[in-house]
Image 1 (cartoon, rainbow, N blue to C red):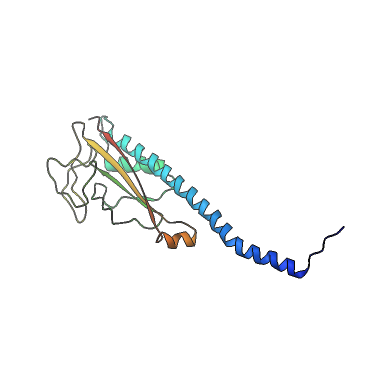
Image 2 (cartoon, one colour; image 1 turned 180 degrees about the vertical axis):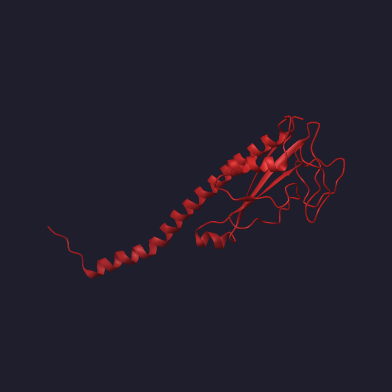
Length: 184
């Protein structure tokens, strides 16, 4: 026995598909965006740990900010990172450009304001030269005597799904940090 579909039944299935297709596509692209966010978070978390390990190691030539930045970028292959003020301030209200991140090497829980050079300021690896505050960046004072250093990466994740972009105002800031005590 053969089943015959009338034009009315075909039209009904097209209407049902037209109703269900946007929901399925949103779900599919939402899963892709979620996977991208998890991948980027895992990448910047690993990169922050490797940067902190580089910043604290004791050797004949103590590490500098550029050594830490190189180590972080070597482990964050698919992530675009910049270093506007490597030693702070870490301002929570400022977001990096779309799909880019900022790298900071500071003392733990760095204040959001520009810091001046003081004896208590230890916000750079030990091989870094001392410097006064310039522009909007904090002063640089090398860590010593087993002071803790924190490497922080703030990444502005922009979803590829337009509806999710609108809901999240085109950015989700992912942040990862690692804090270790210096070996010198």
